[in-house]
Length: 111
Length: 114
Image 1: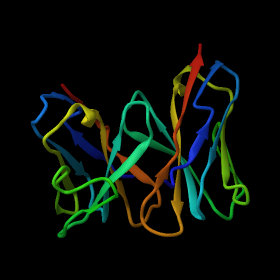
Image 2 (image 1 turned 45 degrees about the horizontal axis):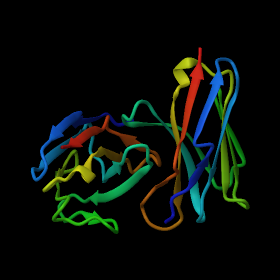
Image 3 (image 1 turned 180 degrees about the horizontal axis):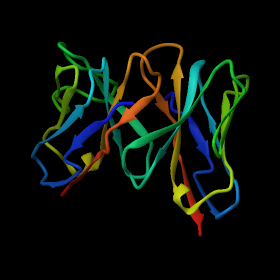
Image 4 (image 1 turned 30 degrees about the vertical axis):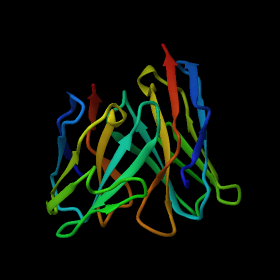
C-alpha cells in the first residue's frame, strides 16, 4: 500500500497549546497536502507544500516537509476548541492521478 | 473553489439492497473521484469517474459492486450494490479542477447496512 502513516493517532491538548502531528509517506511526490475532517464529514483542504519547499505558513498553521526522510509535520499554534477534528495528510505522487491519504490524527482541544 | 452537493447525507439500508449516491458540482471538472472511509479509517479511492467512458476502478473494487455513472462534467453517481454490513462506511465524492492541485470534497454519505 502506498498509504502514508500519521502519528500520533490521537492527540488531546488544552486550548491555547500547540498541536503537532506528523506524516510519513513512501514514494516521490509532487506535493503534500493537509486536510481536516469534522465529525466524519467531507474533508477541507488546509495547506499545500510542494516538493521543493521546506516550510510553509498559513495563519496558525505551519507545515514542514523533509523529502529526504519522506516526512511532513503540521503544527497548529494557539489551538482552539474549534480545531477539534481529524487531520489527514495526502500525497500527490509523481506518477498517476491518485492522491494517497495518511491514516489520520484525531485532535481534541479541551476548552 | 468548487461547491459539491452530495446526497443523501446518510441512509440506513437493508442487506441485499442497493443505494445510489449523487454528486453535483457547481462547475465543470475533469476529474471526479469516489472514496470510501470505513469507520475510524483513512480514505480509500474506489474509482475515478470519467466523463463519457467507463470509470477506472482501483484494486479491490469492481464495477458490478460499485457501478458509477458520469453523464456530464458536473454530475456523477455511485451505486453500492447488493449491500452487506461490511459496506457500512462514509462514501465521499471529490473533484480536482484542472487549474488547482487540491481536492474538493462533498459532505459525504454515511451508510449503515443492517
